Image (cartoon, rainbow, N blue to C red; front, side):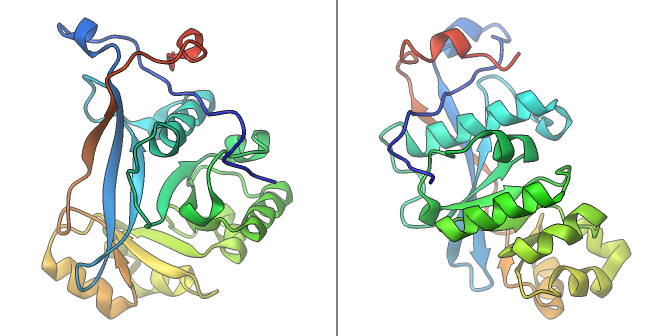
Length: 238
């Protein structure tokens, strides 16, 4: 059973970069963006990997090991650094198939976390059973960047939320929305930039929204202290 009381997860750092790399060495960062209801009340946060001196990281293009370390970093900074970053709101955190299958204890409170399964996850029976077990523990599950792939459709049976990028609605329209909501998951519209986009997504059946029309992702500095000794030998992603 997953327990937040077990060994703490590690934080990870990218190699130093830029003229001020030395001064940034011990900065510990995490990104956060709100997920909102239509009345602009805050419903949840998505927590994101961030690194000092780096802008526009394309984590979706990293290899599986690097992505898994980014997930571990987010868990560590959000829940294990003595600072409450989400309050009583759920935290959506990206997980790969590999991390979910290789990490028996996710080291976070199931009542506080939504497991956001990345779009590249291979949805075989092992992953579906793993997600079912995690939901039984109290975790909720979101399918990220839904476009109706075979793997994503297989995950809908375990999904509490389905996230759809607004840009994908331009070509797929209501048919994509109907597919995403077919098993009753809550729909989350991503990359909402304007009130017109919000109105359109409301009409299509979305109830939660994320994007610059509500707030941009912000970077939080969790601690300036050097990493604990047990973290330093494994403190880089590359």
